[in-house]
Image (cartoon, rainbow, N blue to C red; front, side, top):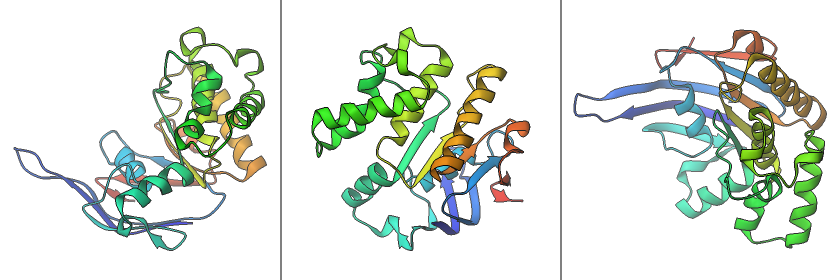
Length: 221
C-alpha cells in the first residue's frame, strides 16, 4: 500500500545540515500493524510526517498505491491527506471549545461534502464503538487523558482512511491507560483491517505488533 524509495530528509541549520533520514526503503502492506521504534531523535516522527504528507522529503519517493504523492499538485496532496491518512499524536490536539462529537465530526465539516446530520450520526457511532457512549457531549476538559485520546482516534478514523499514523499515542498516558489504548488499536486492526504505523518507545507494546521496524541514525536497522 505504501512504499518509500531512497527517502532522505535534511534540515538546514546555521550550525550545519542535519541529516535525519538517510535513505529509507520501506514497504507497508494493507492491514499491517507496524511498530516504529528507536531512540529519541532517530527520525521516527519525521518519517511518519513524510508518510502522511505533512512534510516533504529532501529526496526520494513516497508511493501510495503506486502513486508518487509528492509529484502531485499541492491541492491534490492536501485532498489525498484528508481522505487517505488519519493521524494520532501524543497530545490529542482536540479543540477545547467543542464537544467530543463535534471534534470527531470536524474533518467532515471542513470537507463540506456531507449533510451535517449524517456526519453527526457517523461520529456518534464511532464514539460509541470506542467506548465513549456517555461522553459524547463532553468537552475535552471534562474527559480523562485516555478518553481524550479515544476521541482523537475516532477523529482520525472518521474519514475512513487507508492508514492511521500514530506518533507516541500512549506517551502522555499512565501505563494502564496506555495498555487499554493499545488494546483498542489492536481490536481496530483485527476487526476492521485498518493499517496502523505506530511510533512508540514502549518495547512491551511494540513487541505485540506483527512487525517492528527499528530506526537508528536515520536508517532502518
